[in-house]
Amino acid sequence: ATAAAVSGGFSPWEAGLDLVLSAVVAVAVGLALGWGANKLMDLLGDATLQIGLSLLVPYASYVTAEELHGSGVLAVLTTALFLVEYATDADDVMTRLAGHTFWDIVDTLVTGVAFGLVGLELHNAVRTASGHWSELLGWAAVIVGVVVLVRLLWLLPATWLTKRLHAARDTAEEIPVSWRETVVMWWSGMRGVASVALALAIPLETDAGGDFPGRSEIVFIAFGVIMATLLVQGLSLPWLVGRLGVRADTGREKQLEHDLAVRAAKAAKRRLREIEEAEELPEDLSEQMLRSAFDIGVRISPDLADDERREAHRQRARRLKRVRGIQREMLSAARHEVLAARSEAGADPEVVDRVLRHLDVRSLR
Image: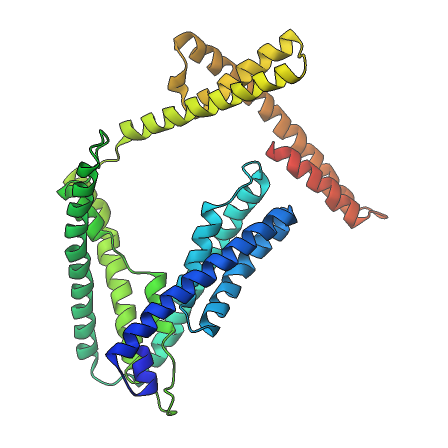
């Protein structure tokens, strides 16, 4: 629709072909750059460089796809899914922790900037939009109704189809989706950054040099839809969940957690046996490591242990908590002393920062 408005012409066949080619090109570009980025991250081996690359790759994926007349958004999504699915280094703890923190910050900043841009655009949209306020608000209300109704219309058959496919597989696991859960999923379709991005992505001018038709009205209506769904649906969703009595299936979650804890503990024990076969460990160290392997599972799921072992684990946990509390106080005193040394005459800031970084890393252990 945007391309037709910009170019001034529309052909259903050409539009359909462009849509298919755009999707194919986007997926191909996303997979190619995702594969290349994954290999490059393995070679880098540094958390800072890997996170920096994870920030650059989406831009490269978007620009490349757009240059090849593909969907930049779909290419970025494909790249992201590939990188998440095929992350190979299970022991790269620092990159995962730092990456999660970094992308949480980026997500917050992007959301804030997007809504800020809508606020700036809204002022211009209100000033240049044709039609009375009441007419624009009426159109916004109609679009809100359509958005909410369309979500319900695709959720109903999607839920039914999911149940049928699951039943055809003849598995014992149940899909916890009743009409109550369907209603909650329907009402939780608030609009946010994606709608903001789509509205702001509309070009200002057509190929002929004129203003894009209805852009101000579209931005105004998009803002109305976003605010209506966020405020009305967002604020009423907790009440609806409580009214319908929808609760998380904690029993199933605990069982899954328990099963994963068992697998984790068994994997740790297998590795311990491999180490014992490769080298002779002192008996006391072997017993300590065996308890540590068991504790790995118990920390995840306390129900893994019987009453006696659970109590012993609690005692060790309390003792460890006390030890770590003392260590935190000691490390805090050390950090304060190092920071105080920064302001002393003759202090080398690089040396101070290096020592402080060692203390910070020690605090994370």
